[in-house]
Image (spheres, helix red, strand yellow):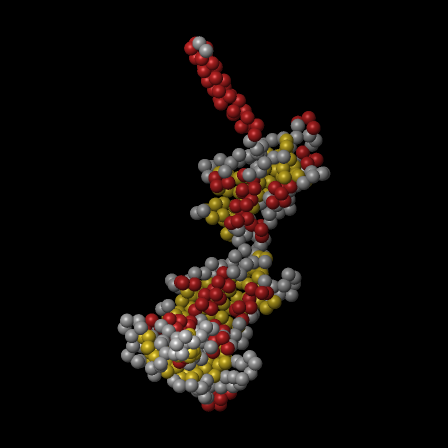
Length: 484
């Protein structure tokens, strides 16, 4: 090919490529792009105005990154619900647009005025107000619905999911969570019922029960209790009316609450609620009046059980109360065998006293010490452990085993005993008692087994037995280890 022809071909290719890139490509992209009613990014939305037939207009505004209802009342919004509403409008792809020649009056589609389904308007962070979306009726056939922009008579068809998704009640949009209490900032927790009061106070990193009995509290149980407060969700709200209506506390059973829960936080702030007995009307539940702002809500029956549990269940049920980082001696006194002691030296090596012929398994005392540190009984059954009759009743007058733990100097850190009134039963119940405490606790055999040890449990297996065998070639006896 002659040079000038090659140059001409190259130039034509470049011109054709430029035409495709700058002229045809934008057309193709525009044709392939989804047809949207409005083009905006969900994260740019700052305000939402909602209007529904026979309902008060709703105004929602984003403040400090959180959605807040401002009208018809001021209340935190359900963040996920509002975000989904905005995203549904931002991602809305039209199924088709009706030709101007085929459209009827707007009322035929439910698109007159603010629409038969909803009117939604978004305001952006830059102050721009987008045209309102008017949502009307569903289509006679298919899973679709009609809509339009407020400043246009053009009728469009949207997926039915958008039509149903934009219809929200004020209750739908309100945050149904009622509390957000930081347990780590709590100083005290009080539960007051009809016939009892249970009070807890923080002391540094530990919690104490101060009523109805003074004892160490189960900190993890109290954390779970506060989590249960935070998990309370409203099934319904009872609000003052714009016409001056005030909820009747007596009618709701809140003039004489059956339960009051109060949490005092650092800085003097108090959170909590008063709760009614079970409400008669359906759905069944309890009315709750929040401390502070007086907000009244209805909550499910199942959500209140933890607040009425036996106070003993919120007491610490540790069998040993001791800092096990200092424990260097484990002392066991089983009723059916010899007492023995396990000791750890400064190099971390363990020994057993009295000495045994077989070698001590070094990992075994470490596992047992760790188990004793975590050992928790299941229930508290009595605080009469200082009385002989009670000890006999629970099999602790002559316990099956006594265990104590001590530091490197031999100073006892904690001690406990365990027994059963009927250890030979098919499924015996065992009882545990800390030394110096009147509290008696119960548990199953799996807990008792973590105290019930003998020296053999810590020793390596005995050497395998050997059998004498005569060598037929020499007549001499030789030793051969028998296989298992």
